[in-house]
Length: 312
Image (tube, rainbow, N blue to C red; front, side, top):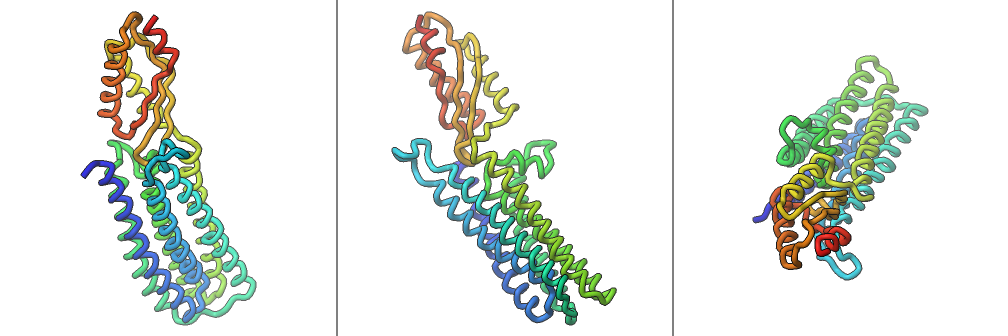
């Protein structure tokens, strides 16, 4: 099995784990919210339901991104995953954050006394276990791509696999949301006040809005054509410059076409007087050297002006 297939399998595992966890949790939260009247628990139920739908959107993106290249999409459909991940960010913002804030404000205006919070605590504890499992699956997948000395958030920012970092951010927000819900329910019970629970619902909504902005920033950058980064570009430049056929290396331009696919254009100056067969051999050698260092760089194009100068 290739590295690309391993990474795709890891992404699917992360999504399936999140679907199973969120679906069961959402049902339990809605049932308990109906029994106890907790606004925070209802907000958490909405959150989990939205997350479940979002994982299905990511699955659609995964399947569409694997479609082979055709005449209308000569570089394939890899960016389809980023499009669907951006829809997930919009869903978290509007359905998750928006509905939680709206319901919290509505409950503040017309507060209702809470019932015994025992069932809330039970569901929150069970939810934390399931969410923690899903979070840990996505964390392990991110750690496989983690560079020495890099933090987990730096790894998320550097990751090109939208499925993995989307689930990780969602699950992180979910665990924080469970904590907020537990605090709101507890304060309401301790102080016998119906206002802490709706306030927790609003806080959960604001948390989801923040998570949505984080997701939108990461997926939006990839969708509009993010490159491979300064360090990787410098390394590729060194690989090209050390080849005996290269006299000078100019501008390198790269664009992420998918989680494991990059387009690279290179303005290089070959040694003058080289024969066509020598240039062809040099290009093949350079492509293999770059691919060995960065397997994701699957398309390399050399600037035509530089090629013409080598044949003068």
